[in-house]
Image 1 (cartoon, one colour):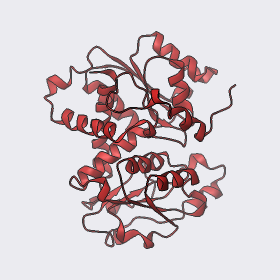
Image 2: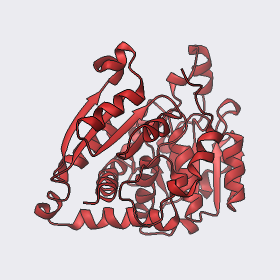
Image 3: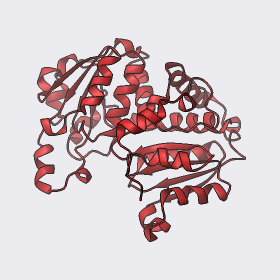
Length: 333
């Protein structure tokens, strides 16, 4: 069995010109936000806007000759169903396997490479993949000719979530340019692949300042902070939400993920951080936006849901159009 690639090895590989995307997405693998230029990001967002206003009949024919496989090795509600719904809404044939470790030959020990080769041999035009290994999307992409869309790879990346988060930020701040916004990330910043991808995407778009709130055990990886600084982002790290709460234009909350901890004690210690309650919401800007990639546990109380600044369920809706846009762009619909 091959030794898994480290994060720096994965990103070094993706830095090659053939992996970069500027304007033409056709046939491209979507593995990391680091593949995307600023032009490419705006291309996805504008395509999502176009699809949202497109007549149903035209939209439903966009991928009517295409077949999409949605293969998930990890649990998911929103990403799995939104990709499935997005492909169906564009007229594609869709095969979804939710629980690959239980309901596919992965249970028998089949490698990821062999699984995606099988999908290619069956005539699928693209594979949407979620997997628990950091290098999974890259391994899959290097094994086949059809494009891979990364729907979450280990602790490393979640590029489609980051793109829908950017759309949410722009829509919910009434078309503010990311260059004008201060985003505050709270929670699991070490293992949270949504935070890793979104912070890098916002840096590409020119966000000037970001704050990161977490206990020491869940701080952002040092290489990511260094990368943000190299892109000109002023970063602030603290364990106290109170220090940055009132400066936030966007408050992005994540859950502490039990699946990455070896003991219950370590998990409980890590999650004993800040909780978003109505009292906390009283202190943030009237025009600020509260986001969460979901699922939540108790890091945002249910009483906050009625606050008009709580955008996390609208965030899900924005994701449908972004994932439709990516499928359409990659498959040339």
